[in-house]
Image 1: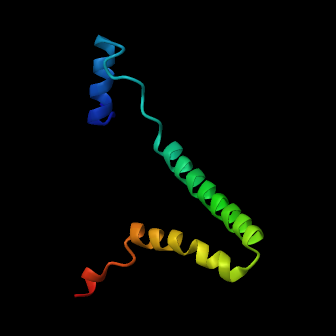
Image 2 (image 1 turned 120 degrees about the horizontal axis):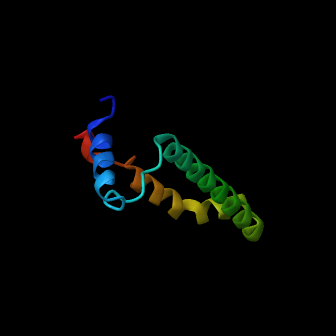
Length: 87
């Protein structure tokens, strides 16, 4: 058989009970495309937020200060500030 073990197993289960395996999972390419869409949506949201803050606050300095907590959260989430690795 040319099928991978998990694919062969799920196809055998489907012949016994069509609802046993549930809905088929989306292909890997669709998942990658979704990840790209989320990244672009996040970038667009960030640009919109910077523009709105810039217009409302009227100053680059105030806009950067307002974005500071977001930047700190992103640094903490991405693990850029991992001081334990430098010990």
